[in-house]
Amino acid sequence: MSSRPTTTRSVWAVIPAAGSGSRMGAEIPKQYLSVCGRPLAEHTLTALLSVPSIVSVRVALSVNDAHWDRVDAAIRNRVQRVTGGDSRAHSVLAGLQSLHDCAADDDWVLVHDMARPCISVAAIERMIATLDNDPVGGLLAIPVVDTLKRSDADERVVETVARETLWQAQTPQLFRYKTLLDALAAGLERGVPITDEASAIELHGLQPKLVHGDAENMKVTVPGDLMRVEQILRSRWGGAI
Image (cartoon, rainbow, N blue to C red; front, side, top):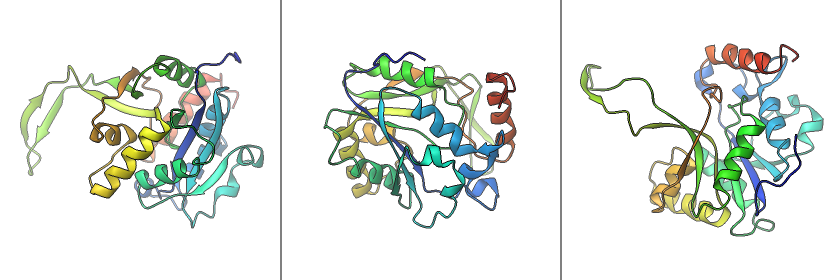
């Protein structure tokens, strides 16, 4: 992997991981479930720690998280744990606040879902390079290709939705430190829904840039997703993991 810098500003990473992952129906949070013989979190963290321009990784965990020690100590010792909140936005905000004494206002902050273990170093570096001079920042996303239907309360089709300008948001998402901090704080104070960092930036009156992602960068949400991400990772490394 090249050690060349991919940005003119420092990049700090924040991973919100304080949720319980209840849709998995597992006894432990999904980031600790086994994928290719390792906790899912190890795959995600290994990718981020392999990006030269990322100077620090902060992981926002539940105050009651008793499973963090499942992650290999060689990885745990390279990231900083912070206490997350009741929602994704609160956890990201906690990660940002932990950077108060070290991040410059116009440094980049990269936010990534712990439950996306198939993110590649190449995709992260490409996104950082693409957005380096962007005034707003942006996110990985893929254009919607399936036909979309809008339903009523009885789950009957009301209309077919035009898909030509629709994208499926992914992570990482990359924004300036102070801009994202202010956007999240303002959105939470107003009590408006914040589904991802880009939505907070949009509520702040800005337009994030969409950067083409990859369908393999899927999010583990339901039990069947574990098998799929394991297949992706094993095929990527020729079965060597």
